[in-house]
Image 1 (cartoon, rainbow over the protein chains, first blue to last red):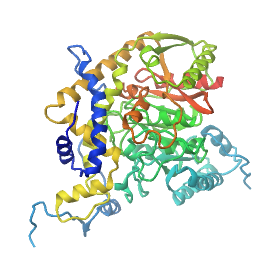
Image 2 (image 1 turned 180 degrees about the vertical axis):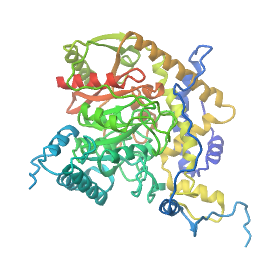
Image 3 (image 1 turned 60 degrees about the vertical axis):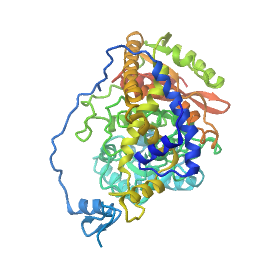
Image 4 (image 1 turned 30 degrees about the vertical axis):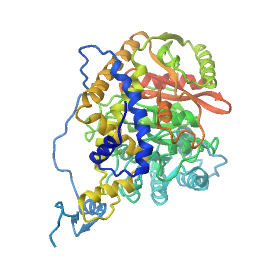
Length: 99
Length: 478
C-alpha cells in the first residue's frame, strides 16, 4: 500500500487540514504503515451473511425543545468565538465579501 | 472537633465509613486532598484544572446534609476527579486539546450530573491524550502526565491523568473513558483498578465523542468494590443517549463468595508475540492463586480476535474523522481570525489540533473516501461481526476470558511517541473488547521489575456483574 504525496494533500484538503512540507514528510510513511497494517483485513474470510447491526434497543427521544433560561443562553453565547450581541459572527461565505 | 487525618489513601468505602462515623468532615477530607493534589501536581501533571471553590462548596453542602441525616449515597462528600473530556458546567473542559483551552461547557455530562446527585465532590479535571487519542497521555496539548510510580515513565493513556491521580492518592476515585483500552491500560500501568462497562450501560451524553460506537465511560479506583460502587451510580439508561440500554441493577455483593467458574484463555491472545516475559510470569502466578479459589482455566479458541486491532484502526479513525469535523472554530473553541471562511477552518484546526488527532482524521477520511469505503469500512464492519460471534461462542464454553491488559509494563516517556504503530500495538489486548461491546476490567495482579502488571478479565455482554464479582474475589487473594 503506498500513499502518494498528492493523495495525502488531497486527503488533507478534504479533511480541512493544512499540511506543511515537514508534516507531509513525517506523515507519509506513518500513514502508509497504518494502512499497510489494516490492509490485512482484505485477506480475512468472512461468512457471506455477516450484516452487522448494533444490538441495542434504540430509544429515540422526541425532538422537543428543552427548558432554557437566560443564564443558559448567555452561557451558550459566551462560548461563541466571536459575537455581536446575541448573534454568532462568522466571515462571509462568499469569496469576496461586500464592503 | 474533627479528628486529624493521619493518613490518606482512602477508598470510597473507607472514606464513606469514616464520614458516616463523623471521624472527620467532608470539608476536612476535601481540603486534605486538594492540598496534597496541588502539591504533587507540579511533578505529575495529572490535573489540568482544579475546581477549588466548587469543591469547597460541595463539601460544605455534603456536611450539612450529613448533619440532617440526609446523605445521598456512599459517594456523598468523597473527593473524586474526572477526565477532562467530560463536560462540567461552569468549569473549563479542554479535552486535552489546544482548540478548547478556554472552553466552558454550558451543561454537565450525564455522568457528572449523576456524580453531583450522589453528593460526590469533584475536585478537578484530569489530563488525557488529546480528545482521548493515545495510549500514553503524551499527546495532551498540556504536556505529558508522569507515572507516580516512576516519573520517567508514562502512566498509560488516554485516561493517564485519572490513573495517575488515583495511584498517587490525589483523589479517592476517578472517571475515565475507554474507546480501545483507555481506562484499562493506564490502570494496568499505574497499578489500580479500571473498569470498562458493557457498551450502552453508561451514558455518553456530554462526553466529547471520539468514536461514538466504541466510547464508554467507567470507574478508575483503588479497589474493585469501589469500581462497583461508582459504576452503580453512573450507570443506567439516559434519554439523552439513545445507545444506552434499559437500566439493570448491579448484582454485586462484596461479602458473597465466588461460585466456581471457568475462565478461558484465548489462544489467539496468549500466543501473540511481544508479551514481555515478566508480564506473562506475573499473569501465570496470578492464575495459580486464582485456581485456589475454585477457578478453572481452559484454553479457548476465539477466532478473528487477532484481527480486532486492524478493525479498530479502521472503524475508530472513520468515526474520529466525522466527530472531529465539529472542531472548526465556528461555534465554540478557539478561532483563528480570518476574513475567508476556508482559512478560518484551516487555521483554527491547524492551531488547535495536534498530530495524533490529525493522523487519525486523515486515515479515517481515506478509509471513508469513494473507492476505498467498501475495502476498508465495510470490510471492517464485517470482521467486527465475526469477532462478536466468536466471543459469543466462547462465552458458551466459559464464564469469563482472561488476558494481560497490555503486552508490557509502563514504558519510558518518549519511547513510542514518534512511532504511531508501536503505540497502537499497546492496545492489542484491549481493543477487541470495545469492538465487541463487552465489559472488561484491569486489576493489578503482580509486578515485573518493580512495575505493576494488570490482568484483564472480559465478560459476556451485560456480564458486568460477574466481571466485578470475579475481580473482587481475586483481589481478596492478594
